Image (cartoon, each protein chain N blue to C red):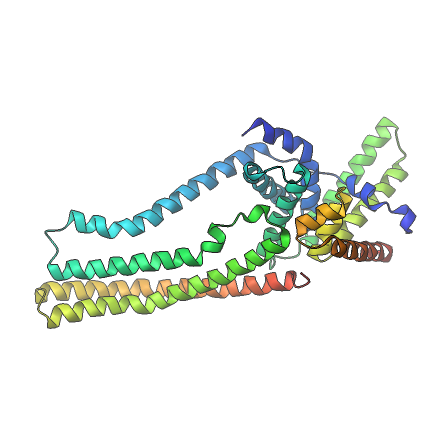
Length: 193
Length: 177
């Protein structure tokens, strides 16, 4: 076929086109907004859960438990803002309207940050049991809690640590591997940029 | 949904569909991508400041959404292997020929030749690397070098070089078929 037979622009415009399903778009739009509101609600609940618990149960907590929960709350706050810092590129960037080169760099950066977020959450899996062990040890050696009560709490913490921490670690490990794979594939797709 | 968006969909819907077809061969995934692109355009309209033409702006949003789509579906099975592609193309060609024969405007042979050229071109465009594909489709949609450069974030000289190479590759692919 010769070049004369092929007026690219003209032929390109002649292809069959599909129609946009406006009703489906409306549903997607609504679902997307609901999901965003839910995420915001969960994020807010995660941060304010501890102060609410302390406010509702002040009489049931000993001073030691109050101090311990405050330390955990501070740690959660620092962690929350650190994650926010890692997500800063995706949060403060209007990715849809950037030039494609910028957009590709941002997508790569976002994958790298997601790998880091998964990694630091894996680290959190090692740190969390230390909080529980630290609490139990200080309460035991410092006589801050009734021994029977402490034993009951220690058993509960042990069960939580054995069930949830490995699950969380496995989930984060899978996410870390997934984003590493996605980054590698994305870089190979756009290596000519 | 604003009235504006409905007007934009009716004006630019075919353009968005052609962009989707340059990234996806499978009709179902193509429709899915078209919906994703349309949603992205709808969301981005409020950020449109009029610094470029609306068409350039929509193309920028559409291509960025398509890049995300490529990234997400990188390890999915190749869309070209789906049998629906062939079926869809054959059925659309046959129905087009039927319509033309009934209306008596063009001979079935010339319609078949036209459809064949379209299929060849679309398939060749999908084989190009993403950046070349993006540049060549924008050029076929009537954008100038400067506008394409703005969308891609590269210089217009670079656009010219890539476009010429892409057109050459397209002709090679088409002639090889």
